[in-house]
Structures are given as C-alpha cells and as structure tokens.
Length: 231
Image (tube, rainbow, N blue to C red; front, side, top):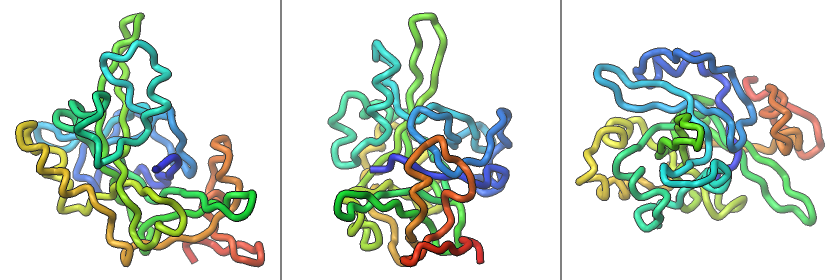
C-alpha cells in the first residue's frame, strides 16, 4: 500500500508536468497523510491542469465522507471489479505527483520507517483515479486514490505492495485514453524499475502525520546519526 508520501517541491510541478500553474496555494509537505489535500494532474484543453483533491476516494454515490479514509489505495488487480473504483478507472484518471514515499519494516515489536524515491531525488507520479462527491449540504468534493501493485526488488523486503509509479512516457495515455479502451491500461500497472530507485531508513518522526518538516526525510544510519539527503 501507500499510506504516506512527500511532495517537497510543488513549485516545480507546472514545468515538470507541462501544466498550468496551481491557482490554489500548495505548500511543500514532507509527510502527506490520508484525508489531506494533495496535488493532482489532469488533462486540459491545451495544457494539463493542476488541482488539489482530498486523498481517499469518496465515490459519488457514498452516503458518508468517512468512507474515503478507507479508500486511499486501489489494488490494480481488482480495480475493475470494485464498485468504488471501476468507473473512476475508466472515466477519471489522474497523476499524483510525489518525490518520495514511506513504508515501514517490521523489526521485532517495532516498525522502522524507510523513505523510497528516485536515485536522483527527482519528481515522479503515482497512477491515480478520482471522483466527485456531493455532500448532503450540496458542496462538491473531489477526492483521489493511488493505485498499488506488487513490490519491486527494492521494496519487497519491506512490504508486499507498492504504489504504481508511471514512467513519463505513460503520462499522456494514462490521462487521455478513452473509456472504451481503458482496460488496456492495466498493462501499465506494474512495479517500477528498481534500478532507478533508492531507499533508506529515516527517523521515527515520520510516524506522526503532525510532524511535517525536512527532518522527516533525513537519512539515519545504523549508529543513529544522520546524513543529509542532498549531500
């Protein structure tokens, strides 16, 4: 699964994704958690559109907003069988920008957090789907889920799932393939190339969503000292 990630350079999103700049304020976050507002990328008439959505998909037919907290991820293998996700997969796909995500490895009675991202620390995009829910008061709320798949060789010793990371060559078809052809996109939902990625242990600071600072992504060594990520 993917239950926490970071996007520390939102100012680079428009250029990287060839999108219009965010009209809404969006701050850097080193510890993004479910139900928070997250940046997403959708197709537009001329350029792609950047917008904020709530993380945790709320199907349009849901009776309660709380259902979204249980739908932060959608399994690729069953996305077309799940009533909450199948229409969004065919009709409403998006990219969810990030520059790292976290997973926890069991070690005795504790869990050790690890940061996982690209070797060069660059931006990338999760495969996402979204929906628009109308509250009982008539307010519209857009929300999204991150698709997951089996882990690659880098992640498999930590967790049995990982988020689907799309290579840049897949961005356009993911966003624009028409509904009748969407089933063919399932072939894209595979583990990302492990040779292009890096993981390292980080401080337990990241265990609490309230901790949101660059300290969350500082590498820790076995001796408990810290190394600067960008050194």
